[in-house]
Image 1 (tube, rainbow, N blue to C red):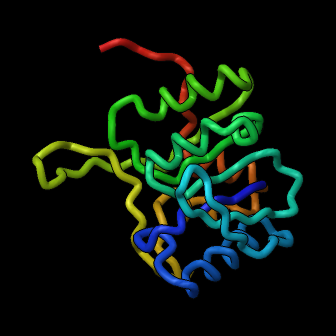
Image 2 (image 1 turned 180 degrees about the vertical axis):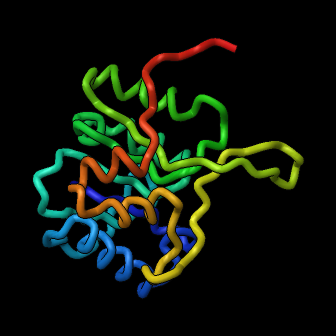
Length: 174
């Protein structure tokens, strides 16, 4: 499994939280995890590591626009499973990302973090998977990340299925 983390200070925060996230990945996958490498994609900075677990997938923790950009990359679209630990700021953004990815790989599965509704400063309802609750992990986590840890003994793929929400390819018109 590939793990991609936005290098922005609002997500990566500091070197201690980045290392804590790697330790978390090791505990969730129960396998060796490479060290974080800095990468740049379309002028944006990210951290990247790989867990040695035989899962053909990518888990991205980043803002929705960065997730969309990363999911447009052929290597990520070619994965069997892509997990977006992000907010869905605009209705249907998750389905738009999946639609594009399925042009490249009709069998790809896209999973999104569980969303909560909140009212932003312009009085617009938004869906968020806000990272908070540092808790025992040492870095800010989403509800889905906490559930992934709780379900880790079921195997990584099953834990993802029980902790994140699958994006359906069915698009319903308003």
